[in-house]
Structure formats: C-alpha cells, structure tokens
Length: 94
Image (cartoon, rainbow, N blue to C red; front, side):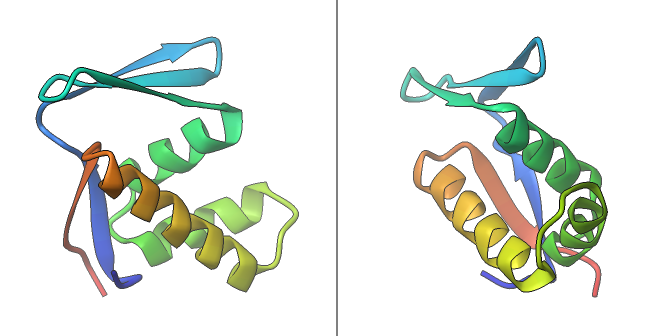
C-alpha cells in the first residue's frame, strides 16, 4: 500500500455513526466492526481525501502526533480495514 492511494468504503459496507463512534457492517460476511472516536475520524478523513498522504496532512493538524508516527498508524489502520474487507484501495492523486 502506498501513501498516494485513496481509501473508500467497500460497496457492501454500511457505516453508522453513534455519538462520535462508528459501527461498520460488511453485508457480504455480516461482520460488525466498531471504531472509537479516533478511528471514526481517521476513516472520515480518509474517505474525504484524495490520498492517504492528504489524510495524514489533515490529521496531523488535528492530533498532537509526529507525522511519521501518524502515517505508520494510518497505514496499519487501513491494513486492518482491508483485512475485514471494509474498504477498497484505488489510485489517488500524487
């Protein structure tokens, strides 16, 4: 996975916001996945951004964290979402 790629929810995934936290439901395998406030915000920014790098730039302004640590955490988060088939990766803008 590269920082230039874009992250979107998979077509068969529903997301419900519950007071700042989110629940994702994969309709294909009927698995639920819960996100805390930070995970929910990370996913929102990923979906709004044209690339993982752009999402990193937005999030580093919101959270008191080193950019390299944020990028590593974001890539790990996306890997986990991919493992549950909750998101898809496509070519983003460079």
